[in-house]
Length: 566
Image (cartoon, rainbow, N blue to C red; front, side, top):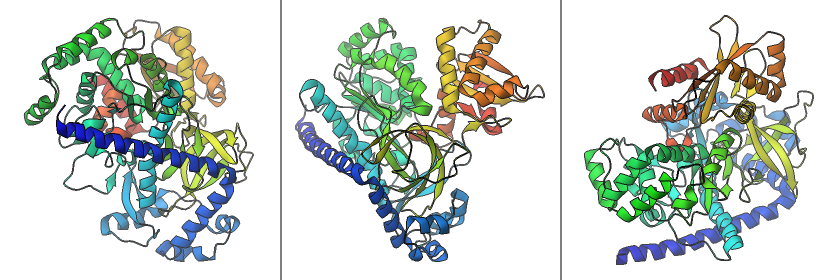
């Protein structure tokens, strides 16, 4: 190792320990806040209202006259994005300030557009910092605590596999995906901290970053963790290894990048200078991959891998289940729970897909999902076991904003709720009022797979109107290709399980409002190709969610095109 690399690694080690300490301080502070969550959350609201009273919207609403939560709820209506559309457009295009907030807006988060056109949500400087700090420092603190508990030592200074990426620009743009906020702070440590070289973390041209990131990760003899945005991304990477390991191993053996991989000649040459021939590593990988993927492969190829961090609950639980097959007993950290509108809660311990809410981040109100309960609840008034739609007020100038997220309260930690994400109200299949959530669809598919033995890699439901009456149709991805099975019998099994998971669906099936479910098996990698198409259109890989419910005509057409051309 060169002197410069030794110095770089030393600086990185010191920075790592410092950031881990900051993470511990942040978690300790949050632990103390749980005892007084209501007061802290109310103070958060009053601070936002005072600071934003002298804005265009603040004067219109007379925010300076609001002295209590009751005042706030009586005077301010619920809002959604279109209420702010014109003012946000003026902020983005005209660089106007003082319209909805006086807090410095340093970033506009582009939503992933899962239910329509993407939106640009203003993000304050403080919230941007909170995302970056909680995304990185919290993970280091949780990882260090677990590593010490299991080994008695602080975690070693070994590289990790960070799957996030961002687009390289002449200067940092203030518009992008929230998930990229943490990257800017760590790019200076890329060569000593992460398996991916800077050229494929800060991307400057069109290239197959998934293959290249996987190649450089496999070239590392050891990795400490895998981290990024979603468990679905890790599953796609593991499937790529499963299906293309011979090519990956040969590239590591020769220190070259296969000519079939999309990357320019100049970038290929630049990356190959970083990828040294390693026959010894190639032989070890070949030996392990030839054993197959029926037993956990990650501990076999990276002995020190001690943590896998990413969103893996609710919509992503099917991927967390598959990732467990590759990871074995390696702990999962389910990261943070947030959206473009704010960071709401954090995972406090490994292998626990629940989140402790942050009382000083935004002001929360909770609307019961139960139609017979029309009350509005605050942070300390929730009932464990019940579901609520969350309404937030943040420092970026969104007031009583309905983000459409539904959470389930698991328990209380002190006076602060621990929650699990359930579903989004605007991401439902709804033909005749049955309102099937992705959680219900996933549970039905999981039960179907257990009963039939059909290996489900992925799936997508949509509403089919071709026979004159609405019915559910589902495409199930099965890479093992058992398409000769009796799909009518399979459809009956899945229909039964979906009726059990969503009683409203079962009722509409029995009374004839919904026709028989249609099932199609395919070996086309549905969501991999869906993500590739979205990336071609300019979407960030860090924010692409799986397509499990094609609930618009456009999404159904995309699904059909993927299957037809896959």
